[in-house]
Image (cartoon, rainbow, N blue to C red; front, side):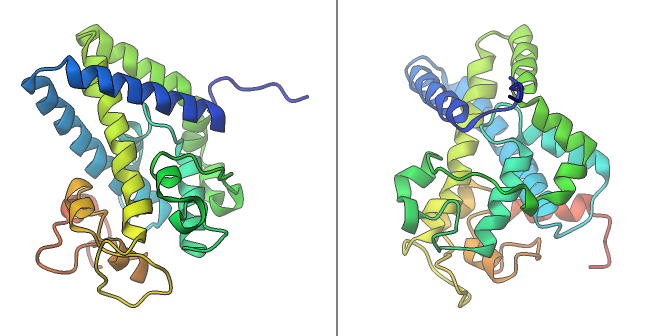
Length: 254
């Protein structure tokens, strides 16, 4: 019997951790000050824009080229404190694009329901064949095998600055990031938005999700051209993630 690596999260552990984060969020709502919320939202938006640009547009879709330091830094900003290691994120999302809104879509609201997708309760098991380069990456596999360790280490580092900052500057922003990211799997695959492109799936653009996620909510645009790093197409489709890409990308001729 293969010995369990205790730093690699299981599906049940990720669900239990997410439940704990929701309890912490409720506590924070009733035991917080305005300045703590301001820091919380600032950290959330940094994690959202920098982290999601790295995990989604750079690593999952390779829609632009960037220095390795940015890929590693973005991973360290995005992954610790969350419920999904990079390996799972990439494999599941690529499967989603290949099988969007079908029974093989690992987080389709049409299959599992909106609440299950939003709270990441779907029984999706990532197929590692969808992320071969991640499996070959020493850095990303190191992060995968030590997911809980890095989550703890970052928490300890924040605790040394301010014990309560673990709540308002680490755990709660991580939970907000989880829910904002999940909105692009639930709400933007519903009739609640609008469509610029006639794609084969039910993807839609959603104003609320677009602004909450730094441009990730222009999901129909993204499904129409997954390799395009610019998600916002209309003037009102605010896309700070793409502005960041313009600053760091090395393939400037594209």
